[in-house]
Image 1: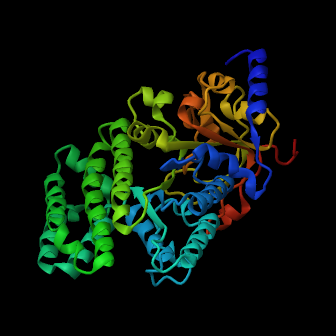
Image 2: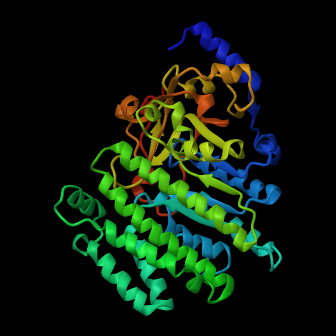
Image 3: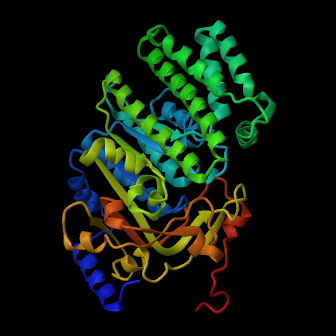
Length: 449
């Protein structure tokens, strides 16, 4: 931790550089100027359950779509689940409302996408698309993640049953390799890693190769609809291949499986970028994911241990055409679970550790603001010094917060822009159990001090 005088100087620098957010529509105009002509805007979050992060990402994304011609939103969600939302917002779905469009998000943590902020954004996106001329391409909504191995298998089989029943039989035989494990993908990964069962690696690769070999035939059968359906199926086949490898790497160490997952996300992003011109769209994409995926890993102690992430890979490939936006908070409430698979709770977020980035930003006494860290400046240099930074995922354990949720980072190398909210509130799940409604008692209960 730096000295008190250094902390005081840092607060002064941050206050001088801060662009305060006052709740007006024009708040993010400076950010849009900083973004300029960037092709990718990566919008993070410091937790998977904070209303202000979701609301702000949505507002920025709306402006990117309206004012800068962005063609898609790509999110930290599974491809087949998000694709149902994509069909809804583009007028291709039987879903009657956003709630129904989001119903495929059944896997823990459901609140991450089945929440009131996402419903509002999905509703807006559908209305925006409906307002476009009939011949203008619609803005899409896509998933980048790879947990949906079995759902993606079903999607590939359903597609092939429709376009090529004989190919569907071959695919079903190849994918039957997973049948002994039902939907327990981790059990498959363990057994394949330690030689307790034969790996499915060769079979899933064969299936992807065959699908690609027939791309011209399948994708040209009915114009744009056929191309879109083939693209969806191909991405699912690619996801199965990458997910199979991911589950085998889970038992070799965190770095290898994390790197496989984030590499898959970037591969999906690149495939979207290559696909959009065929739809008559300029590939400009807003990405929604956790700070840990979107902040440049090279600026963190986790990156120093060998992890890579989406932010690093996109920066390496696209340079200044990618803008990385991180979010922070000091305290408030968050929707999170106490353990994996446990019910959603509304939990109190402890005030940030003194000396952490969150604490320094909070001590400016500006309730919410943005910092532009891309240009050379005093504040950029000052925020290069390593400090603790907090990350809350779908699990929050305040009793072990330092060990569970903090790591060292160099903020101005990790992000191009940081948006700070001193106090934040839990995102509202669509399915709210009594445990969430009641929430935790604050640590000061019953004295209130």
